Length: 324
Image 1: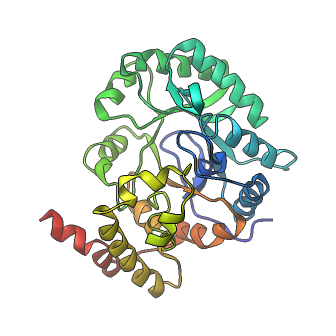
Image 2: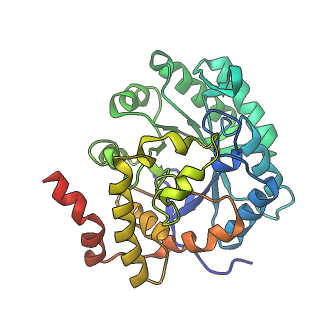
């Protein structure tokens, strides 16, 4: 029984009605691989998924690359035996290479193999949205997109989309078959997609689910200098420029502004950061990563958090001054 009704919108023109916030399963792939998040207890991951579903979240976004199958297996375990399952979105094109590094492949045979392996790990008969993870190698994007179209024709996937593509790449594949969904990074610390990608999605009625709306934890209010220093070596964020100086001081000042707005709404800085991304008319949903059940409730609140003009002015004032 859902505790409340979360607001829903149609994902582009797919006909899928999705909650404004979805469960992001990148971090539950754990550590020990190129873009890992350090140690992760699978029982915590499953409990977090179940808590999100209890609150009404109706979609999960994962990828074969997250822990090279681990995230999908955990999602499959969490869904097993549920009376009704949420929508499941996953991705292909990043496969395991030497030393648990990622190798990009957009070859047809590789993508078809990946799709079948994902279906098996997830324990489902069709993937609701299947996405190309990265447009790499760029020379093969048409071949990869044709493979996704083939899977859709076979009924193994219901809708097809891409992640991390630019407008020129989108135009190339759109000639083959329409791009139904886009998954770009978007947050207060990653706004590049505002200039071309989001307007493109609106023009072509492509659904948009944004990833890392809290800047991979940077905007949660929990990410202090001390905590960054203590991150495990196999957490990719420890070495990312956004988590180091000179950018870090600027980002922590932004978090302080988010905290002031959060206090006015009796919510968390992370929820404010997510709600900020949902204000953009091109954005249908935000992917939010949860690693433990106690993290879920405060951020799911972003789904119906209405930010005022005064809130937006406070959040963005320093950025507006820098851009001037």
